[in-house]
Image 1: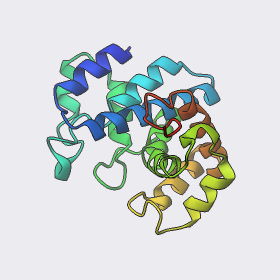
Image 2: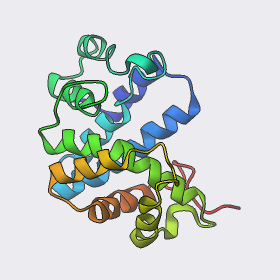
Image 3: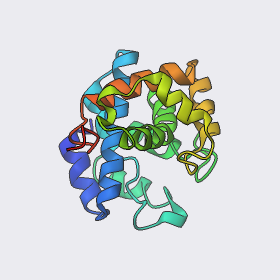
Image 4: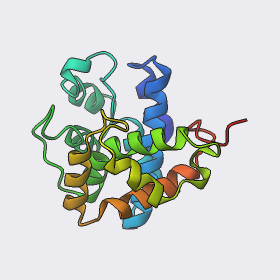
Length: 187
């Protein structure tokens, strides 16, 4: 089973840009919340979330095309690799998310972008971010415009959840890691 230490070690072999490591941590924290919601192994889901963009820096135009073989060779399980591939469903892979872990990763990858952007605008960062404030930003298509809201909605539908409920889970999980995510109070 993939651990956070192994996920960090593997991501460091392909990634150098700080913002990509920060995104990996945001998604990892979000996956912790989703695992908790589904009664699953939080540490495992966090590790898979952390590693989800394994080949992105090296192959941004061919994202996820250089992921499967190296990760399998490194001892990442087929289930974990499939989850990572499924987060690109519809835009860079045809691996449809079917498990709760796959659907969660598919959805939180984009959701964390809007949450992070909203938190950065607040004096207290994510620490006092409420889901109602997030939803106002979510409905404003110009805010964090690169984040695919339709994909988030589709992921929530796959999970049988409302966007606000998924956002609540993810916000609370990200709050636990506010300092590590650089989303704590501004000084």
